[in-house]
Image (tube, rainbow, N blue to C red; front, side):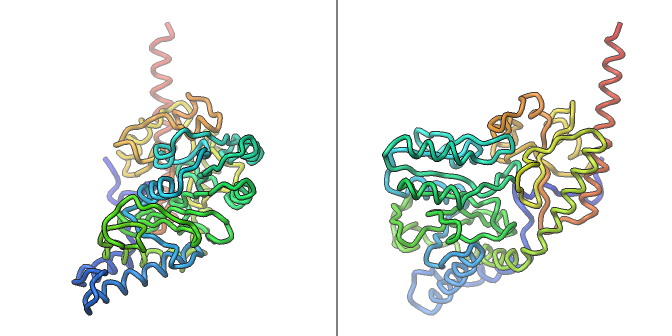
Length: 380
């Protein structure tokens, strides 16, 4: 039987809609008008879209004119990687999200170290190895481990060799300070439902001097970079979430204290390993093992205890698959099979973190009892 008040610790999959975003969506739904219409109702809708463009740009330190609204992070990645002029080579880190890997053709993977951080020397060698234009895609924060990538250094190296740089910042936005200009990337993908906005809306930030070939053609919306009537309620909700996330960014650090306490307690109890521990990480994310217990079993047992966690990226129709990210980090397949992801969010409480630890100890204890019983029954 689950707890009366379920504990949700899968915020990297999607996080709760912020009250400000919910209210903004409701207010925008009451606006009748196409943002492309020139009459008063159309101008009201247009104002909502342009105010939202300002808010989303402010979240990542970009100019509003650089923001292109999309249907989410996946479309933003598609538009970034398919929308730039064809490049002879596509390079991406070995730990990128599937929505990047499935779009890029003939990928050359940039290796990562044992903590999952991209190898800059390897990237430089790959860039220097051929004198052909390249597109480099490196995420800002990994969705499974929370590990942060040195995107500014990646961009500097890439630009020295005439390459363009795309950064998937879907997991990082709203959880850490981001400055698009300082990072130096040419394209950056964002998603509303990762920061407390509604699902089904995102954005691609495009350097102002970069031409973009639209995937969706039709009207001239989004300055001709993405056709289709704008999703005004979704965009308004995205903006409200972006404002709230930016205002509360300094409060996000408290999640790191609770995350660290979880890891400390579990490490003392049963030598649980934390992947990416030696690298800078998002404050809210922990990818950790429960020795001897498969991830799928853990997810089920935690769910029965009223706690939602995941076994990795939530993009496989509910399937628990071996982690490609952990494999790229050199983690043994058997150990990787015992890893779950715990991700805290803007509405997580200290009590939620403590309840997770209590449930983890209980689940692990039950597994020990079953293992001992099994060993005893087969000892003869």
